[in-house]
Length: 176
Ligand SMILES: O=P(O)(O)OP(=O)(O)OP(=O)(O)OC[C@H]1O[C@@H](n2cnc3c(O)ncnc32)[C@H](O)[C@@H]1O
Ligand SMILES: [Mg+2]
Image (cartoon, rainbow, N blue to C red; front, side):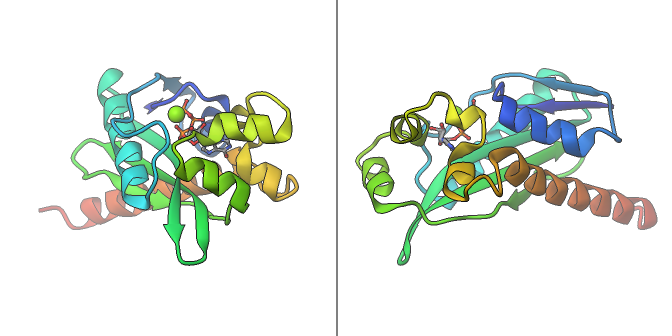
């Protein structure tokens, strides 16, 4: 069973491997185009990015399952929130979608994103470290390491895989 992931980001790939390890040892990855801005600024835009990546990854390897994971931010009355979405594309099924945990970003970070900067470089500057987005991520930094980016994505991937299994079972038990 080929599982294809639409990214080369190690934090995202590690999350897919952790969840799919008992399912498949054929996990491949490709840097797909998300089709949205590098820094999505709403839930809808982030969802689109995740779905585009899942479909592209699915097609690229003629995979059984294509996974797309996308990070973004979403504005609410309570502030700017980190948001993360995932999508799963499989044969004969509409893309399955799931969202992840969210935290409010500090105002000094939020202001820069709203002015058009990308979270990745902003986090590196803020922490005086490099490639935070490939490591614990903003979520890891601001939760004192209690939930890192891989764990956050792993939860989304479980939500995707579980929905996929449910839909497959429904199809098997109620053939058209
Ligand atoms: O290679 P890809 O798969 O594109 O991985 P990415 O790290 O760029 O992740 P996304 O495109 O999904 O995220 C959109 C933007 O938000 C940034 N970002 C998202 N979550 C982040 C996090 O937890 N920590 C740091 N940057 C993050 C990221 O660098 C992008 O600028
Ligand atoms: Mg990106």
